[in-house]
Length: 55
Image (tube, rainbow, N blue to C red; front, side):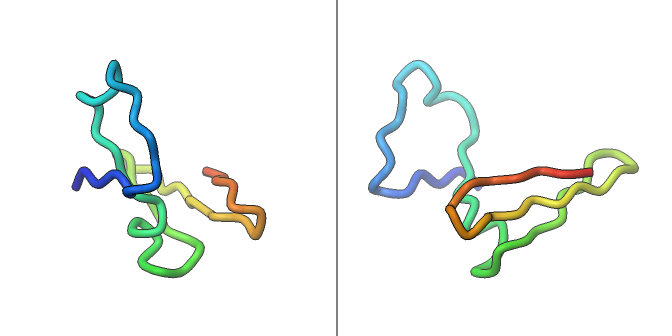
């Protein structure tokens, strides 16, 4: 799922990296759970538009 919002300028050197739209990850809300192996993390979009990833 690689999607770069049209208003974001991409660094040509990083174009080979997968890029995800955080708004899509949270499905229109402000929180998503991300699993890595046997651990769950919470991705949160703050009111200021910043991202916080917590265990």
